[in-house]
Structure formats: C-alpha cells, structure tokens
Amino acid sequence: MVALKRELSLFDLTNIVVGAVIGSDIYVASALTASLVGPFSVVLWVVAGVMAMVLALIFAYSAYYVPKVGGPFAYVSEAFNDFYGFLAGWSMWIAEVISLPVFAITFTNYLQYFVMLNVPEQLGVRAAFLFGLTAVNVGGVRAASRLNDALTFIKLSPLIFLIVAGVGSFAVSPSFVSNYAPLAPNGFGNIGTSIVLIFWAYVGFEMGTLPADEVKDPSKTISRAIIVGMAVVSLFYVSTNFIIFGVVNSAELSQTAVPLVLVGATLLGLFGGAIMSVGALFSVSGSDESGTLGTARLSYALSIDGLFPKAFARVHKKYGTPYIALIIQGIIA
Image (tube, rainbow, N blue to C red; front, side, top):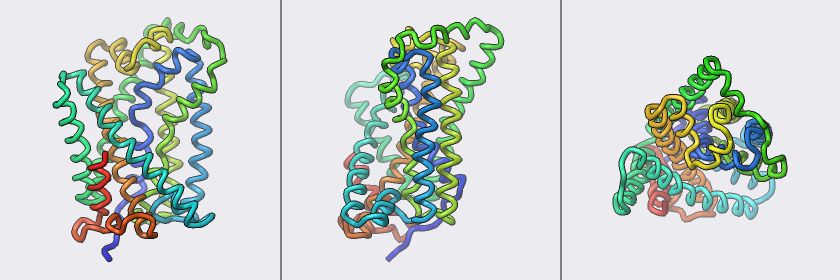
C-alpha cells in the first residue's frame, strides 16, 4: 500500500491553521455584532479568542499524545471506542464537505465587486474554483501546502494594510475614536448571541490536526502549529476589529454586508475598498484550500479503519495523496 509523504513543516502547518480559521467571517461578522452590542464587540473578540485558545490547547494536547491522521476522529476513537470515533468522524466529514461550496459561493459574490456575472457564469466560476483546488491537492501535499502558504500571506496582507492605515488615521484624526462612544449603544442583552457569532470565526484550527501522517515530527509540530496559529489569528482579529469600530460608527456598520470593504473605502476611497475585496477573494480561497486538504485526510483515516469505503484510502502512486477522497469530495461540493 502506498503511504502518505511526510512533507509538512511547522511553517506549513501553522499556515494551514491560520488559513483555515481566517476566512469570510472576519469580512462579515463585525456588521452582525455592530447592531447587537456596538463597539463592545471588540471586547468580545478578545473573550471569544481566549475561549477558542482554551479549546485549541485541548486539541494541541490531544495531538501531542495521539499524533494520528484524522485528528478528532483519532482522538475520540483512542479515548473511547470505534463507535464514538465513527460518530465524531462522520459528523465532522459531513460538516466539512458541506462547507466547501459555501466558500465558492462567497468567492463568486466578492468577485462581482469587479465584474458582474449571470447565473451560468457564477456556476462556472464556482465549479472552476472547487475543481482547481482539488487538482492542486491531488498533485501532492507539497504543492497544496505551497499554495496555502501563498494564499495565507496574501490574505493577511490586506488586513495588515487596513490596520496600518487605520492606526495612521487615528494619529492624524483622533476624532475617529469618538465612534467607540457609546461603547454598548443597545445595552448588553445580546452579548450571548454576539459571542456565538464571533466564536464561529475562530473555528477551523482542527484542520491542522487532520494530516498528521504528512507532518514532520507530528507530536510536537501539530501542537506548536495550533498554538502559534491561534495566537496569530487572535492578534489579527482583535486588531482588525479595533480599527473597524473606530473608523465607522456602529449604526453604519450594521447596514452593510461588507464591513471591511466599507472601512477600506472610508480610509482610502475606491482603492481601499478594492484592496479589501481582493483580500476577501484570497481569504475564502485560503480557507477552502485548507478545508480541501484536511477533509480528504479525515475520510482517508475513516477508510483505513473500515468506517468508509475502501476507495477513500487509495493513495496516488506518484503524488502520494488520497486522490479518490479528494475527487469525490470535490464532486459532492
């Protein structure tokens, strides 16, 4: 039987974690919470980040002692038995496969900031998006990780741009800070709902645990990648939202579906809006790339243990990837 290749470094896996977590949520969540708790959302991003880090540490601990392909499926199977592992693995696989086309739809929506597409054209873009990522992943984990590294760097660049531009604007025009008052214009009754919405944006780090059989020194590397990756994510999330709520008031934020584009346009006009729209395209692409890579390893692990059709465990002789799993999930998506 052809084995998977151990080619993922700490840098690669950290980018998979960051890439999986930072997707479309950061581009929409602030508009949703603006109407619920206003600028107090920034505090909740910190709270949700701490909560997510606690959960991430549990995954890091599990990965250290059970460095097996399949992540959560392997941990539950090891702690309990195959039945509970089956429930955990199958439910996660279904959820992840369903999420893959969501990113393709979001990508198409943001693409229309630049060019309008009719329905057939939208379907064509979505299909090309999904099968393009599938093809790269079939071509080897090294190629997939290099693509993910590039997408992660590109997706973070607009956020860095926004943060720097925002801090510069605060320095030049301190009046922007007035947008933080009142801190919670609608009171604190919607804190629970807001926390749930924000916490969802931190989900995805579990993707870093799935390709364990392709990670160099998995016990140490997976744990470190999760911790470092979540620290990077938290820093970007809190900093970005601090700028968002300082540049645009909550009432205006709550009326838009693309808050980061609005903030970018407020700071630098059409150029700023375009930069953030491009960032959204790469952000959802990076998340889907991480999801494509990780989800195939989950079905591969389930197949090895006899809980999925045997075909999902087939590894390409040349590229060393679970190509059947990748192709089938691409078709379903």
